[in-house]
Amino acid sequence: MHTVYQRIAAGATLVFFAVFSVVAVLLALSSIPSLLVAWIGMVVVFFAFSFELRAAGSTRIAWTVVAGIGAIMVVGAIIWLGLSSPWGLLILILAVAAIGVLGSYALRQPAPVVALVSAAHPVLFVNPKSGGGKAADANIADLARQRGIQVRVLDRGDDLTELAADAIAEGADAIGVAGGDGSLGYVATATIPAEVPFICIPAGTRNHFARDLGLNRADIVGALDAFDGEIRMIDYATVNGRVFLNVASLGLYAETVSDPAYRDAKLETLKETLRSLEASGERFDLRFSDEGGHLHETADLIMVSSGRYEIKGPPGDIGKRARMDSGFLGVMTLDAPNPAAAVEAATLWAAGAINRFSGWAQWEALAFDVDSGSTVSIGIDGETVSMEPPLHFVIHEGAFPVAVPRGTPYGPRVSPLGSVGVIGQLWDIMLGKQPKP
Image (cartoon, rainbow, N blue to C red; front, side, top):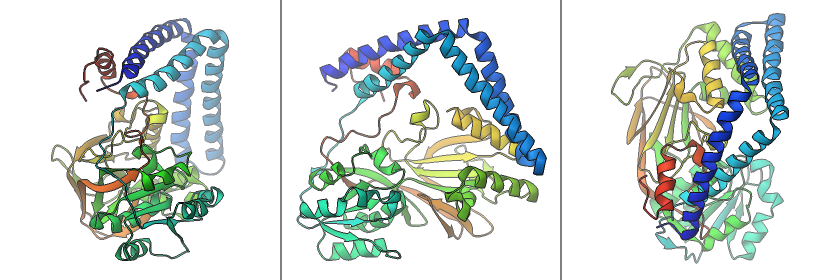
């Protein structure tokens, strides 16, 4: 059950919801010209980027300038709104912040703990290059040794799965890795069948797995407390037997990240990939059946994840998983047959409304299959590999023991503004009832 402090926080959140709603309506009614200019600016940006993808030379530059003008219109309208109604805008911002902090606290569920870590021979693998050298900057290796943890600093070309398996064979009873999302799956491949607790030290660039697990990504040193922490059982996924912890992507994303230029110029590389596909007229040969059993011959993007990702709501919540033990794959597909559709989809994605795009679908499944007439490029937790079809994705429910510092929240902080039915949940919590999920 929720604590009395959570019940108070739930009631306060409902009050701030009411304040936000009233002020938002009043601002909208008094600022129709600003909202109209912002809407026109967004339309200009959308169509300019659409034409820019198809153009070349000076014409492409001209459409880029037009897109810039549209962006200036949007920003200018927001600034004008702030200058004309500063107190209203300030109240909205404060209300949103209060809803995010108090609502997230009120909705927090206690995490199921299987056991406490009792490791006699803990081991930590450290990737000194990951995240621009975060582990080295935090002196993780020395701090771990001071705690009695055996440390192995990785070299280029090391086989992480083999190293982890060797460590387990030598008696390791808790294994951690200080690195990015790309390193985690290799270690988990060895720890999962051995039922050895896995520990994530968020020393990568984005650390999506650590965030969704509930870890504080800004506290790398604090993550070492997991070696004396609590064990939870979460899900993991495989594609043709290969473990992945976050997401596996096919189509446009895999094609884009396989380009060496992607790391330093992400947006421009994506544009060049779209232009190349438009010029060739080719579509991805990716055949699959959707939730209703209907066969599809192609898709521009397929993303299969261990657990369902949020794809709408506040920008800070997009791309998060509310829980890591749902027992389902998350499947997302996108069909954008031309650059204009791709720009529309990207715009709606950025606005947290990709579910409104006609070529978008999202559902949950225990398994998912993709077939093709040739070798398929697939991005697995940020690393592009090639696999022979058919591709068979499977969720493995509650089969992955992970250790986290004691008291770690159950999943990431998610704003109530993006949750369906959150008003009813907060009302139940305030009244001391157990809310429906």
